[in-house]
Length: 253
Image 1: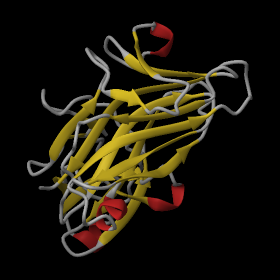
Image 2: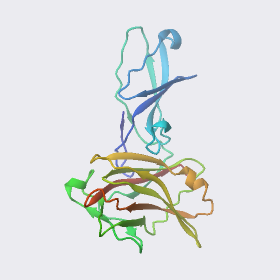
Image 3: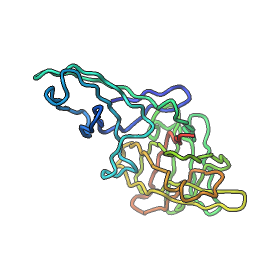
Image 4: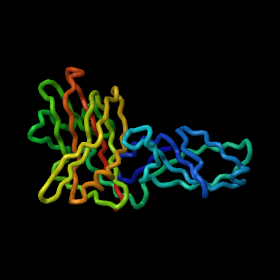
């Protein structure tokens, strides 16, 4: 199962790990991809109408696998016979109601600014060693001289209010742990809320789907939000690295 995005929806990178399969009356189950899905003509009839949904790991936790609320459902009608076999190569997009906010893809700019107590910074790099895709990615270097990173998408003021789901997508590769979260603010107050600590990836690029809805629900007085990054040098190497790309905020208005 692949993802196709429109021009204003950013990267088509994804981490769909399973397909959720529904009949018109029941849930057949969730199947890790690539999946062999058994369908019984005796139970479903000679023609079955199925709905297929792309499944992800919410917050990078295996126990929170679920259909991603912004990927469209794929209705599929199949003719069933015993011993028959069909192969489906599926492509999904975002639903028509999804609002995609391209927070930062580092292609031409870098919206992350550091705080006064930060001794490290987020820089835009064109070094192929640290680029996920496109022309640039974000890079953080931590060392004994640059031990603290406190950064945010300064003055972006994202409106994330919604009665539905609100999520963050991003790609990352890191040799030490770092935290991602939100700064919730209004005219008089601002609070930084680290949400998830991401562990080292051993040089691999990974995709994260982070559910922001609990934070949005518990900050009803906030009029806008900013993305935040925090990291503290762990002394595991002389220089540790955090590479970042394709920050996207998604919500239903």
